[in-house]
Image 1: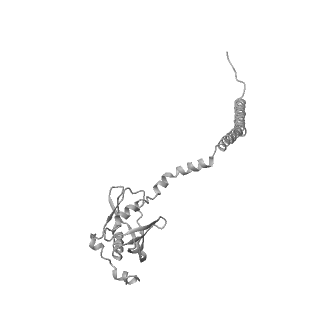
Image 2 (image 1 turned 90 degrees about the vertical axis):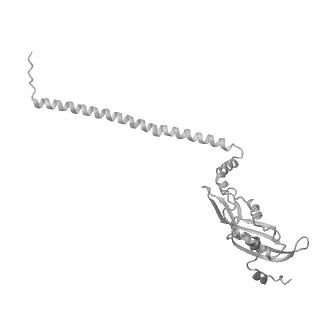
Image 3 (image 1 turned 60 degrees about the vertical axis):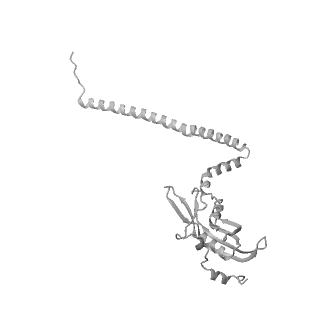
Length: 242
């Protein structure tokens, strides 16, 4: 069978172009419908679903808040919990003041230059240690006591197990020096000694420090028993003439 195409080429091209245009228009319409559906779905989620979720969350918050409010002593419980979170930091910062008794055992000279402590004050804010005491043997015992304090070191080991010595005291001062009578009526020299103590002394970060006397290699009783400024001390004491 023989077919003869009587449609000119231009007409055929026009028909093909119309088909393509129709396909594009159809695709565009379909894409627009799909996009509209997506937008509608998103709008429904945002304005509907989100609102519902917020409402549910608000209701849950109100419900749980009401339960918390009904707990007895809630504020105290919360305060305790907050304090518990700070225990580690507080434990690291705490001071071991009981070491002051070990210090006294190390720095009080033996007889006959011993002293008796009547009052002891540790000022953590100023970092000072104040000792009020009396010396039965007078100025020689007081001077020995001062020298012993200045010769005392705090010894400890660091994290690398290296031995470290730091001076126990600095800025040692003596005040309120006067003669008096003890409970037995014996004559004693009363005094107050104040000094800045080493930060390591009461630090909880240092375990088991020891206290040693280091005085340029000279820690003999004869050295500690000789006052450095005995004449000046006697000149400033009004009752020394007795």
